[in-house]
Length: 348
Image 1: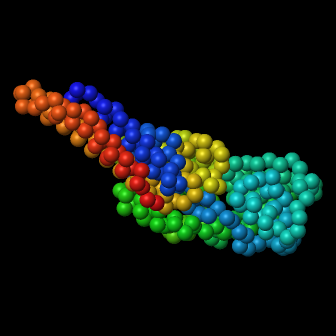
Image 2: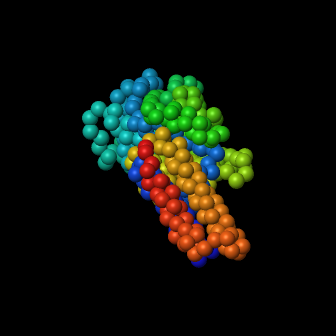
Image 3: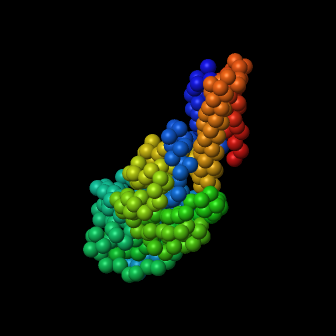
């Protein structure tokens, strides 16, 4: 009776289930007990920028056309070129364009991930995207150090100007990074495909330890691979993202965390943990919940094995009776279950 493993068999899974349930009450979806355990061992957190640390609600801040173009014409061409995209930058261009957009004017659309879009508008070849796109097309352009996300445009192989799009950090982004450091996360990193100036400004405002700008989706995977090699042993690297381009990195990291409210279906499917309200401050809370769950598991293991070992020794020496054996089995199980149920009392 004393050696019956009821306390361990019941309380340990119940601790993980309680942790998953407690996290879900706080708007954190953990897809399994193994991910809860991995979350508790997180020592490095890597963030995507747009939609994760920032609002993802871009607004056109300024338009800078070349002499042969007007501001309205440049903005119209950019909005038409991006009219078939659902990216936040594309939506901001479409929202800023005065008047309706006729998608029938657009043909031969080619989207180049991490670079931009090429299309034919009213018979003209239009390219809209980053500096990488212009270099790929071998189009000369002047240097631009304006803070923000820059969308360059070229028409028929000639540079037409650029549009500055601004995005603001989420209100709780800096708090999330600060609390992660308090939780023992020794390194925070931000990855983005945006220009250096925009990345530097956001990184300084939220307080990440390191940032990398101008990245393609494959570049993000390469950097995460390098960071995985640098992490301390028996610890995990978590990547936090929301876009369809983040799915490969979410799968490659030890732990993938996706933004569930505005995140893409691909990112949510690839992630192990989903934040239902897109709040970065929920990440340190999730780590605290996971560590509490593991702490309760260890408490139950030590308590159950300790009591059973003690009663077994006393029983072998003839110093105990059946009632002590009943307590070592049923009583220990009840106490371990009650201890595990503490995981349900988690507050956001």
